[in-house]
Every structure is written in C-alpha cells, then in structure tokens.
Length: 250
Ligand SMILES: Nc1ncnc2c1ncn2[C@@H]1O[C@H](COP(=O)(O)OP(=O)(O)O)[C@@H](O)[C@H]1O
Ligand SMILES: [Mg+2]
Image (tube, rainbow, N blue to C red):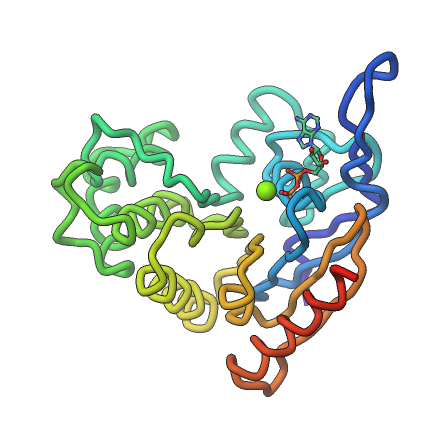
C-alpha cells in the first residue's frame, strides 16, 4: 500500500547554537498509509504541534526527511513549496482561522481562488463540499453568524476543497463543546471510511483519539508506543487509551 506520509529520523531543535536550545523532537520515524486515520497523542510540551508544523511544511526539521504523497517536502522551497502545500495538504486548527470579513462560501473557496480556478467551477466545488459537510445553509453567512461546530465544518470544507492527499488536524475539537466535537469526529470518521480521506489528528483528548484506527504516543521527543483499534469498539479503545495515558505520565 502506498504511504501518504513517511517521516524518517526527524529531529527538531529550537534555538540557535548560541542560545538556549530545546530538543522538541529527538528521533521520530513513522508512516501513514493511504486511507488511514491516525492519531498522535502526548502530554503538553511533548512535541505534537512541532511535528504537525513540520508535516504541514510550515517548519523544517533540524534533521531527517518528510515525504508527503511520495515527495520529500524538506527539499521544497519558495513557490514550489507553497504550491505543493496548497494542493496536497489540508489543515484544520483548534482556532478555526476563518476570515471574519468573508462569507463562509468565500472562505471555503480561498484555496481555489488562489489557484486561479474559474468562478463557475469554484461555485460548483464549494457547494459540493459544503453539502458533504452539511453546511449548505451557512454558505452566505459570515463566521460571526454561525456556531463553533459550523465554523469547524467550514474550515474542514476549506481544507478539503483542493482534494488534498492528507488532512492534518491540530486539536481541531479543542474549541468545541462536546456535542459539536463528537459531530466533527463523526464527520471525520465518515470522510475517512466512505471517501477514503487520509487523516492525521493531533489531540490530547482520549475521546477524540478513540475515533482513530491507530494512535502514536509521543513522549520525550520519541514515539513511545503505538496502538491499533482493530475490531475494538470505540468505548473499549477509549478505555485502552486512558490506561496508556495513565502509564505514560509515570
Ligand atoms: N518556536 C519555539 N521556540 C522554542 N521552543 C519551542 C517552540 N515551539 C515549541 N517549543 C518547545 O518545544 C517543545 C514541544 O512543544 P510543542 O510541539 O508545542 O508541544 P505540544 O504541541 O505537544 O504541546 C516544548 O518544550 C516547547 O516549549
Ligand atoms: Mg500543541
């Protein structure tokens, strides 16, 4: 099976050699197959966001390589990098990062507008992804006029409209109430299972992680443990995750 993400021997040190240095990632290697739904967990400060920033090509590793959709992104620079990022990677964040003075429709369309796609195709694709995420009725509203759950769906629609190779989420349920968080996770699970969208989700919430098929636990800058959901119910997997988190803290 083709790997959508391949991380090899990644290290990240913050701070120049003459400053105080933090070794956020010591040696991380893993891969994500096409169509997988993988979670990354770890305590606050364990390096989750650092890893996600590197995967999303917003930051470079100090050493090691990262291939997304078989392309070594650590070698890309400038326009090539920006172009690759906008086509191959979709992100959703804890803060939805919608532009407040644009409508939901305009927000979702941003990546296509930047790519110079024609207005008619933009309209079609925007309406299609909005319908997929059940936010058609919000399209002509502004972010301030919709709920948190709808905002995160709009941000997800914007992330998915380019049909990226992978959807990356950094605590995407972190600002949502528990019902909206569950709805978003149900939607991610459905996108993964029905549309075969590959998803990598960083979270410290065991309930969110229990939706994943496989979870990597980071501790002290390395992958400390890995678990698979396999045939387990979400409830059983949730309890397993809780137990692992309890052990990790010791
Ligand atoms: N820009 C930065 N400059 C210096 N240190 C950083 C920076 N970003 C993160 N760190 C440090 O790297 C470590 C990992 O942080 P982070 O990746 O944000 O962890 P997490 O997302 O798991 O909470 C922490 O010790 C943090 O203080
Ligand atoms: Mg973080």
